[in-house]
Image (cartoon, rainbow, N blue to C red):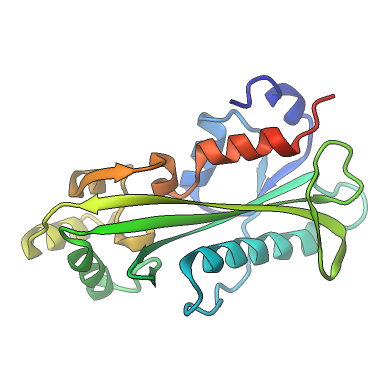
Length: 220
C-alpha cells in the first residue's frame, strides 16, 4: 500500500522505538521502510487494570516519548518515531510475556480451546514543524505531533493437553512472546484459526499501519 510513496518516505530519518525483531522484519521486508532501531527504555509499568486497548495505547505512547526526549533535540532529530506495544487479552485480563515456565504453562492452558485477542497499540511521533507528517498536539510536548491507533485480532487456540503445552514450552519459543506463543513459528501449530490481521498477532498491524501512514503523509 505504501509503494506509491515509499521512495519519498525513505528520504526521512525514521526511528523504530522497539527492539522487537518481528516488528523490524515486518517493516523492512513487508513495507520496505528504511529506519534505525532505537529501543525505548520506558519501564512498562502502566496500570494493568486499564482496558487492554487503553493499556497498549498508553504504553506505546510512553515508549515513543521516551525515545523522543533522547533524540529530538538539535540537529539530526528524527522526522518520525514509530513505537508499538502488544498484549494478549482474554476476559479483559492482560497477558504479556511469561515470567517463567509456570507462567507460560498457565497462559497456554487458559487459552486452550477458547478465543483470545491480540491487541497492539501504535504511536507515531513527528516534530511539530514537519513538512511531510501530520498529527495532533500532545499536552506538555509543544514540539511534537502524535498519531495513535490500535488493532485487535481474535485467535482461537486448539484444545491443548498438558503434554503438548510442556513440549512447546521446552522449545524455548515462548520466552519473549506476549501470551507465551509465537504464531510465526512452532506456535502456529497450536492455533486453530484467526480473525483479523495475522501480522498483528506477530506484534505489528501491517495493513493498518500502511493505511494510517498514507493518511498522515503529505505527498509532495
